[in-house]
Image 1: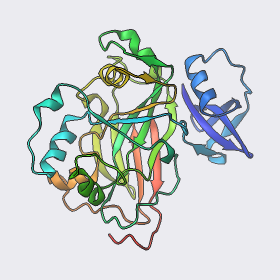
Image 2: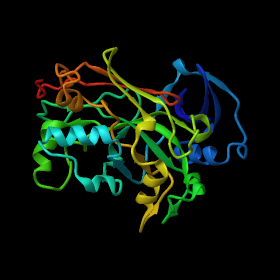
Image 3: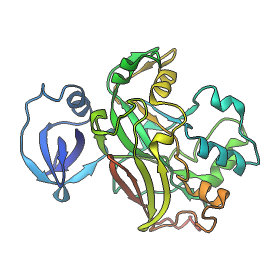
Amino acid sequence: MKLAQLRTEGTTVVAEVLGDVAEVIAEGGQDLLLRVAAHPHDIDRDGTRVPLDSATVLTPIDRPPSIRDFFAFEQHMRTSRASAGQDPDPGWYEQPFFYFSNPAAVIGPDVPIRPPTGTRALDYELEVAAVIGRECADLDPSDPTSMSAIAGFTILNDWSARDIQGREMKQQLGPQKAKDFATSVGPWLVTPDEIALADPTRPKGRMQARVNGELWSDGELADIYFSWSQLLAHAAADTRLLPGDLLGSGTCGTGCILELRTSGLRATRHWLRPGDTVELSVEGLGTLRNTIAPRESVAI
C-alpha cells in the first residue's frame, strides 16, 4: 500500500494512493496511518476518491518521536572522509552509526525550505527512511521477523548547510544548526510488500535527485552497506523504538552536492540557491519536491 496524509476540503485524511487518485480511508493523521499500515483490513473505509492534484499532500509522518539518521552507504562515507582529508575509518565497517536529528523540523512535499541564516553552502541529501510501526527493543538482526517492526518506507531529504556543518564538526559534537532547520519526508508511506524485496532486509530501488529538472544524483538503494535489519537492531539496542520513529539510511552514493563536488563527478555543481527546486525520486516510493525559499542573508 501507498498511504498518504492529505488535506482536502479543510480536513486531514489518511488515504491509499491509487495512481492519480487517492481513496480516503478516514479522517485522521499519523496514528491512523500507522494503524492502517499494520492492519489494512481492520478499518472501515470512507471510500471517497480524491484526485491528488486537488488535494494538498502532507508528510506521512509529521510527529516522529525521534529521527535517527544513519551513515550507511560506503561510497558516501568514503567521499565524505576524503572531503575532510581523511582515509576511511575501519571502525565504520564494524557497526552502523547515526546522529539524532530534529523531529520538530519535519516538513512535507512542496513546503519551501528556509536555509539557516548566513549559509553559503546549502545541500540536499538523497535518502530513504524506514518508519517504525510498533514499539520494539533489543532486536536480533539475524531474526527475519524483526523486520515486522517496520511499517514502511518513505523518502527523506536531510537538508544540510555544509559551511556551518564544517565549523560544528571541528568540535566533535556532530552536526547541530547545520541540520536543525528542516528535514523533508514523503510523499507516501509505502508498505514493504510494495517494494522489490528479493531480500527483505535490502529493498531495491533507483534513487535520483534533480535540481531544476536536471539530473544531479543517481544511486541505488540496494547498495546500502548495512542491511535494514542491522540498522533496526542497532537503533533498538538498549532502548525502545516507538511508532513513528524514523530511521534514515544516510545519503546514497552521489546523493548530495558535497559528494559531487568533492569526488569530481560534477565539480561544477553549485550549492543550492533561492528559487532552486529539488526533486528526490526513489523507485517505488515516489518523488519528494521542495523549493528553496528566498532569503536576503543567503548569498551563494
